[in-house]
Amino acid sequence: MTAVSLGSSPARRDLLTKRIRLLVAATITYNIIEAIVAITAGVLASPTALIGLGLNSVIEVSSAASRGLAVLRSRARCT
Image (cartoon, rainbow, N blue to C red):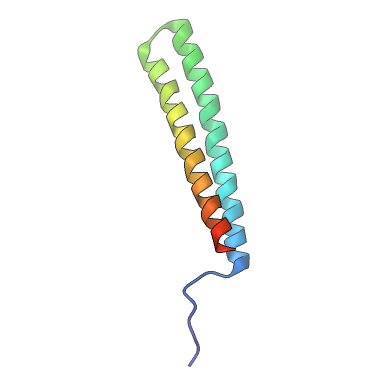
């Protein structure tokens, strides 16, 4: 009988870590651009909804950054 490993191989973990980094970086980049555009448009046109959308993007950036850091820290503990 063969043993079944529930953990992933180191190569698979490395691949997934790289993908997570790319997704987090893409999310942060998109949300920063969205925040700048929305806040600028909100200030120029003065609708509160646009400023709110920009502030929401700032919150999403902090969320993505904290999630990315948590994944990287857990990865550091695994090695």
